[in-house]
Image 1 (cartoon, rainbow, N blue to C red):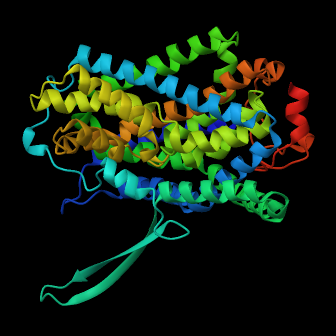
Image 2: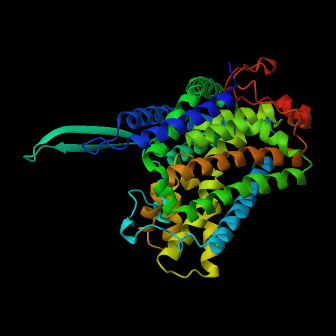
Image 3: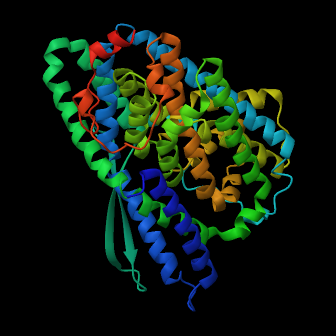
Length: 460
């Protein structure tokens, strides 16, 4: 059977072919999507729905476990501080690249979209919303909403109720619970053991879902092409080019420079991290990719398990070089240019500030609309500008998420190398072909992220 990476590539290629076939079929006589577009959409949305279904318990248990893992690290506080520092450093570099590309390429001045297409998004983000969103509405961070369907006579014909979750609130709850467990000490051991066991089960389920990624890739890519085609991309061609050039510079220039600066071979990084980067590209979810990200970071690239179990879940919710740095920088400049608003040096500094501090607003889920609206509202730019960019957002989001995850792998490697705990031999021999085999040599199976104190001691 082909390797996981090859399966993803096959799904990608077949998705492109089927997507163009669906696009060529066009709409039905009544203006609805044709059968092939509907099929591709159903396959892709079902895969994303499966990923989202496990997000709440995954985020909670992973963050609690990651905080608990700090107990096993004698230099846990220093590692956490170094992780945050390098998150900020790489985000600043990424946003600087985004600002530079926005000024050079002038995407807003070269757009083929009509101002009539401008519309405020359904989801917006302000600093007040962001801060209020940190306060949990309930222990699980869940919410419910209902909508009414009415007939021609105005009578209610159906009521549909949906349950949603706020990832930021789940993160806050998990942080508080994890810190409380550390404070309680030995008495919290049964709880932490249970949490680790639940996390193992959840990640096992998620691994089963991830095995469907090649099929999900086919549906997601095919739907994107069938839905948006070439015309939408052509109208915003300069903007799309600016985003992908920025993403490429970060992934293929900035990250390799950091690795070389720490004496690490670049190709080993790409060989080891490729399964996570690839899955992120097609799933558009940092959190959904998190188990793969953690596995390649530890197993392929030599980062100690206990530290990877902290850094990767933390990064999956806060480390967003694509969604929270390059994209909002270029998009904000696009909106300003399109509406004829001149930005000052202070405005560019605000873009950098929002990118570093507000990145948690993206929360690792698909899309970066909340982060963009947070940036626009901070700068006082028209939120209607977001509507101009939504037509090609899924296409851009693939590249953004891939860079997000690449950064979530990179920072633990850099910090581990600087702290002398990286297994350099394992890093240099990175091999991603055994992604789904069990970690029997480590005494664990898929998804087990319980800290092993001797591991770090031996690494040092």
